[in-house]
Length: 571
Image (tube, rainbow, N blue to C red; front, side):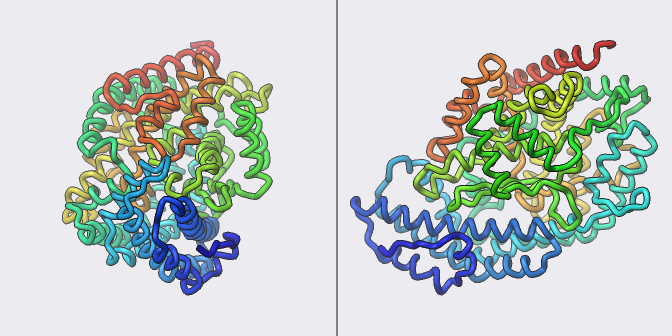
């Protein structure tokens, strides 16, 4: 076979006419034991180049949502390269399966390939491209959301920082201003949602799946748990976590000295201390997070410095930048890329550690020979990221290269642990909402029904904060969760992974070095073993039963109480 030799950046300019002969050669080449490895390597290189090109285009449109030329290039790639490449890739999957060969370390990738073949339909390729374009439309809508605050135009993310101000009236004003700006996009969001849901229903129908959830389950490689398991998980959270949240909220209410908690009371320090401002600029953020990671593990620290040196971090918040944060991978280059929106808050420290965990996963799987071995279930990918947040926390103090005094570091850790516990009920709302949507797509096509179901789920799980008089803001909360629009069903992974990460953290409290070694060993496995084995290698159990959930909640509450003795000695 003719060896493909080209850099990823050169490949970005190739047309399908230039690429197609390499797929044809693979299709025409018989597979036998002697050439199996070479055949797979060539296919892996092609697949990796296509994937890296798509991700580089995605980075371009998310770092600047107003770059129309980048958007045009992205759409052109989706239509004229990505779509035919997907068709060709499908034929190669069938060819490999029909050959009967199973390369070493390929049992789990073959399982994934079989599922992908089952749901593939050529008619879906334009729909997949349409879905990606609609996803970009969501980014554009959010990227344009700004408000005027104290005479300046600010992004809504920047405005959220006011929610940490000790002045309650100021917090309320900022919260209402942000909510009003979101409601201005209500009709546009609902129209976008209708388009997305229509595409997804057709994707499932074309694939012969009973519904989009069944289609997405295979697409997300969910072989180790079922939709019914998710619903049991929701119930467990309702029974175990929601009461713990009620207690945390009541403690907050008492410390704030208010008669009831309102949405603008959730982020402020309950003792009236100014918001933590860990850094002055993003250079300082990167430097200090680098020091923290170096102390967690020197090799991980080297990975992070490589990213800094090679400009693989885009961390500052600005107008015209996609919301949220992500880490993507350039698989041929064996490099990750992180986008986030730092505004000077402690959450930025946590986000960079979190996305750093994803980045380290990319580095660790670099030695795996085949593209298909690097497909990892999101349930473990998020263990990689969330564990890094917990492993880095002991090094937050200035004397260890971090950001804070011991009292501030304790406070930061308390806030993070509380956020994780508070997150689990919210995660249940997001996941349960999506189960309803795709079980009832005809009803979900009408935004009023979505509003009503979101409101019911909110009232079921989100106990302790008073939303009276804010009905429109409460029931349209699903608009503000980008995963619902861009990554359907990708959310329960965060909850599952946090339970796994808490177990990694528990191990680190006993033996930090051994826990990190197990963590890295699990990352390096990529997608070569089943999900439960990945967890076990990391020193955790893949489970979301009441006992596991209760242990995680107990650990979090116990650590909060221990840290409070340092940061709140007068209580």
